[in-house]
Image (cartoon, rainbow, N blue to C red; front, top):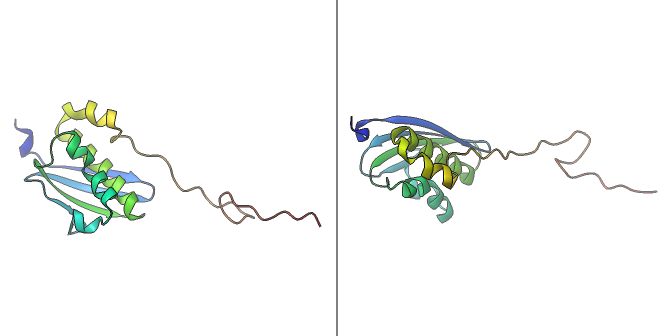
Length: 132
């Protein structure tokens, strides 16, 4: 059975951002929230981050990707999208697991915002102590 004829979905997360992707056989189109990827992600860094798993596995022109992202900021969404694309590629092509794992694209980044503590200004900030 040819892997290119298969369609798959995946979910990626980073901070408060969630990305859901549908990967279809195609010519390399990347649509995010109804817009072209390069129009949605303005910063060059975010554009590079999103395409990293595709470049690592040589599948830039093999699949069309339609993504829906919400929550968090633009950079968090870019990282969530990278995570989702990596998971989708893994389900389509299991032989790419070593490449994706060594690059760190399959690992969900666990860092989250620390909660504000009661009686204080923020997560770490404390009120100034006065002696008199």
